[in-house]
Image 1 (cartoon, each protein chain N blue to C red):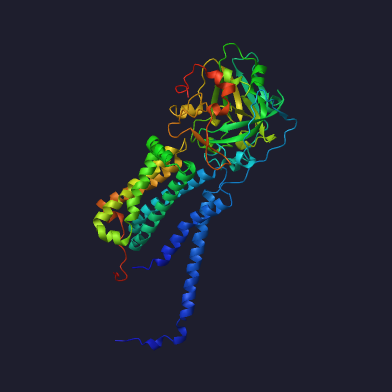
Image 2 (image 1 turned 120 degrees about the vertical axis):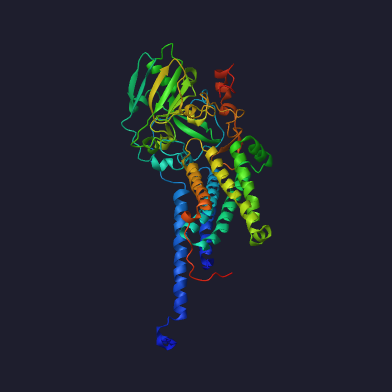
Length: 208
Length: 325
């Protein structure tokens, strides 16, 4: 198996770049006229982006025949969860003035917030069960089945975004389209594995 | 069987371990630096508010509005930088922070405004002639967007009533319709036919249009309007949500029935013809009770008719504002 430690390190640094720049811009008052809205939008977009990138890993590794790429999936998914949590935190503190009551009112009255909150809550058990230990404890099959929920959460995230915009639906539709492509690939791959993936080149014996 | 002996590779030809690892280290460092810079560039490209804008020009002879018609506001005025870099002008972009740079080369001369319909003296005004119809005043108004943010803006302009009196509305005229520029050569979303049905159209009841607070604005902060704020001429109706204030107006018509309005056509359940600021009637998707005043930390309560109840509530006596939102 290829040594992926360095590549994982590169991904970690790159996935942290938006956070560092966002913090930098906050400190220097460069978030524009409406900083809280800007931070909420940006972290929300990043959450959706990382979830979708994490869902691209499996199609990509199968199409390319590079099984070691699976090693990046957990970290990408966790970054998605992290940015989603930040998104929810900033919204609660700044947009709803840290009032839990105001958040609950939003969740119950505003469908796009209901969908967003439900999607976030779906991610919580997935993040908790993302460790090696939990995979062992649940068993691969059950773990896989549970983690299919990430498609629901990501679709919910895209829907949340779609329901929020006033008229320009292009960006949320782009996210939804990417998601649909990856999901369709998984379905196609399940029934037609012969035509949808490349056999990994076995140059070295696999290490346990 | 020939067995190659290790002596056949000379010791001097073997890459030194130090060279090998430093080369590897160098490549890894380069890969890390290049991807990080790339990601940083992408973030900057997609998520950085722009500072670019077309500049306004000083307007001579601006008078101060009389306190009798325009109630004083004690709140601080919103910074010029914020007013001119946080704009909803969907013909250019749906990203509020991207409008200013995209609109910076917008051409506002020559410009004509056609005023017609149910009037005795229809006329096409040249913009420079139109803005001399009445003395220009500075008026500091609250501005409340339907998206629940607000500003305090020192507009420069004159009452719409001055223009309407010039063309003399007929007695059948009950409404005023506004049409704004839709130029595919200058406006990306008009060119691609995206987002909304262009041109953008708005409307008022005639009594609303004649109200002394209803302003035709040509400037802000003592300077001509920059394109993103609606140059060269826009409507300002301070007790209504911001989208009622049509920008870059090219046509005004007086009618006997209610004209169609763009946001109402796009989503009649969410945007009514009246669209008066009203904290007790929520937008179907979000609350209108509070607002984010740009430049402030935390939110403030939204005021009925945006704080202009005393001046305008009389226009709507007997009207169910829940039904006619």
